[in-house]
Length: 328
Image 1 (cartoon, helix red, strand yellow):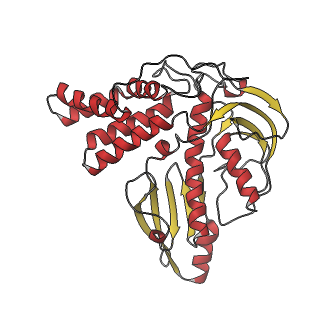
Image 2 (cartoon, rainbow, N blue to C red):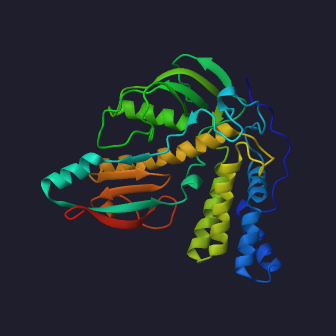
Image 3 (cartoon, rainbow, N blue to C red):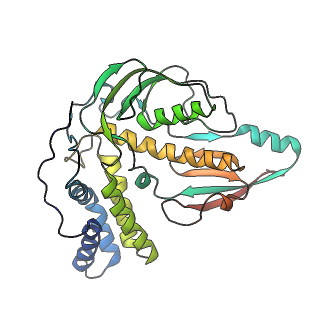
């Protein structure tokens, strides 16, 4: 079905980044120049502020997204304080083979723990369902749709790389999101694993640009704040995008939207982005030692030949270094 027409929205008076900058100036003025007090106030108001930014970013949008679509059964929490059945693919992987081989050979291996920047901010660029999710059965995958899928994953056949499925150990079918499915399909085409089998899906027509204007505004202000050593704005922007992701599901802190499918998809996209960095490192000849959390990648080799160092969205930072083997 075609998406509903776009409702009338009031365009912001100036560029989207100005909404963020003006809010910081107002908070500093109200706090009498006290940076700590202003930062605390900004973080406290991050949820309504980011939702206003999101609404402004949708002015003139091609599609009108649904803010409160019916929640598919598979996205319903199984207990009041529990979770639903969606597997996001959070990684927790360490190459035990490398550690064993280093010890057996009596050599040492220098490893750098890399930290990716603003993982959830980068993950706002992802294919999101526009309207309510519709159920379907069978193995057809439509690239113009997005949602969650019950998949029987193919066997992972590449021991020196983690699977995009993350830390899951149990065999058999599981519900995964669009980014994880697309990553598995891509891996199968690269002969890293057997193809996944789609059993059923909950999907909607999708767009990769629903959050793009908001993401670009946040990136622009973040880059500017980092260049100017403006920690108040840097922490405010971090709070805006992280709380957007954490509250758009079913949170009492955000009454303006209920999209648990978006929440799962954005988180999964962050994990897939980390996996893509691991694959890039592996393909460039680095040894991938560990991948965990949302933003941590451990590699051995000259990583600066592969990744740019810095605090930018596409860059990485060296978090720590350690040595495998020897007297470990």
